Image 1 (cartoon, rainbow, N blue to C red):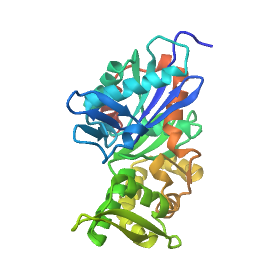
Image 2 (cartoon, one colour; image 1 turned 180 degrees about the vertical axis):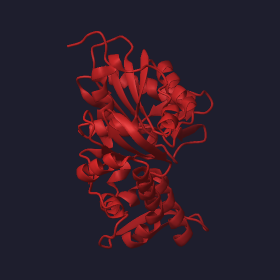
Image 3 (cartoon, rainbow, N blue to C red; image 1 turned 120 degrees about the vertical axis):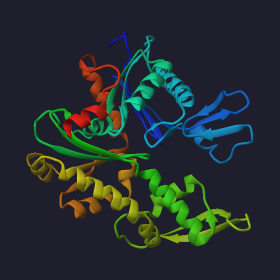
Image 4 (cartoon, helix red, strand yellow; image 1 turned 90 degrees about the vertical axis):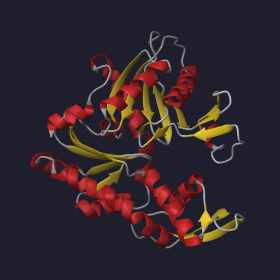
Length: 344
């Protein structure tokens, strides 16, 4: 047992933060939400307790997501949230020194955004910070053999971004990142319910509708009773929604995802595409669990798509696996954007 460090793998997601502790697995799985007292600037709650306050707080308290579209939108809040979550992760360990941390970032991240992530982690208590592209971490976490020259395709659908990458020889051959993901589906449902039924619903309700009756592929028609506020009178009201109408709402954002998958295949070398048609496409991330996403991508590309086991945790497990060769990783920004220009 190592008593000198407790290195951490961090999946810093728009919706959730997962922290993997070396030798212990994923020990922290919390919504990336903070509740802050506006008067003092102090954090009142982090994670699940803060998420329960979304839309329910008194005037002096604000509950917020400090990350948007897979990148940090509020630096100070992110630092405070990570500080609390690092403490929670360290609780499960005997070690005291500051940890070295591997953090996942979307493929489309800029150098400025990379530096923001690194600075936030260092301010939150990390000793050293290493970055890894989300789809690469997801592929490792899904158990793909990435050491060989054979190509694999991973589609990681999170809350803020969908990352698509072709992986080979422990690296990224081609990749793309779009800001269409789980959160986009939730927003589309919220807009539809308001437009068609004049009912205002919260983000949590929209997400529940997506999970219970949402689909991007035809399924048997099931119903859901949504409760919210009447847009005109302001009184509480409920409406019955059906999966058929939600399917129509979700088709457009789903189409953007599969079109992006096709465009990544178009810029991939024929050898790697032939490997992918043999190996199939692996779906990871919470958003990939939307009903029918695997069937839709199989139909759109003609390549078999499979949902990874524990799809939501793949990135965190991949960050954890990469701790094994942390001594060989490059510290600081990895200039993903620059690498992509060179590859292009």
